[in-house]
Length: 370
Image 1 (tube, rainbow, N blue to C red):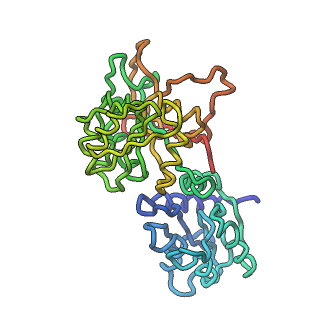
Image 2 (image 1 turned 45 degrees about the vertical axis):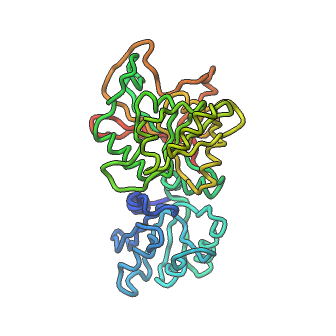
Image 3 (image 1 turned 180 degrees about the vertical axis):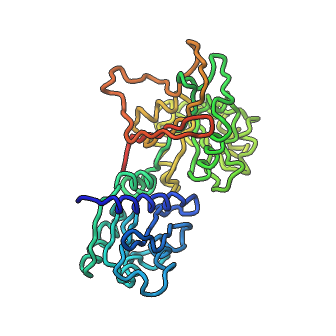
């Protein structure tokens, strides 16, 4: 399929609209739609809230009756059809009622009750249907949705801030703040988008974080500390707020029973994840999946990030690079662990992008695209 510049322009606009979807769309995907005739945009829409109008309906409902006849609909995800448990009318019927001439779709829906059936329905009704325009970008936008449908495990975004020379702290442990205020606000927005925030006990001991979303709207993610021996202090801010904001301490098989019991009394949930002395990343993700938590933000530290990477459990990386040079042989980097002895074995990020974040640069790359 050869796409025109006009097709690409309208689909990029649809993707921009889809990206407006925030925590309120969960567990639904983020979807954008543009209705156009020739070079003119007739209407736009995006999915704004779960249970509310889908993107196609939002765009088409903005037009007077008959105004979309013969036009083209650009949509970032295959229009949905009827299936059990659905809370909104099937978009495929709304599209057919609008008497469009053409539908351009970025990606098919991986949901087993959709999966191309809507496209077949549209084609059977005589519409021209073209699929695959900017498909990779559309898939990346909905990584958590697509991974959940395909493998029933949470999508994992690993985030860290580092200096230009790759340090996440000085040799003396000073790390606040490598990133600027704009980057820290972006992290709070991200916390509001995800279902769980994960850190290792080393980060919890060093920084005494809250791991809550502050200063922005959003959801309240489950806070998770990977803590092999249940060392998290009872007077830490995480434990002191455990009755107000849920806290899960994921331990290994050798966790101190008395420490575990004390954490439970203080309001934390303590759970052994895996059979080994350290929490197993995949076992932890299965625990989160059983609770219908679909997107996890991994915020550090280096040992935990390395364990997830070695388990092939990281899907996306967000790296905030601050304009500092720290140096020092003992200054830590974002990944520790055993590492990879050969460059050919080291995972390679795809679709790497760089964009400004205040005084910093945000690097985004993907290890898996579903």
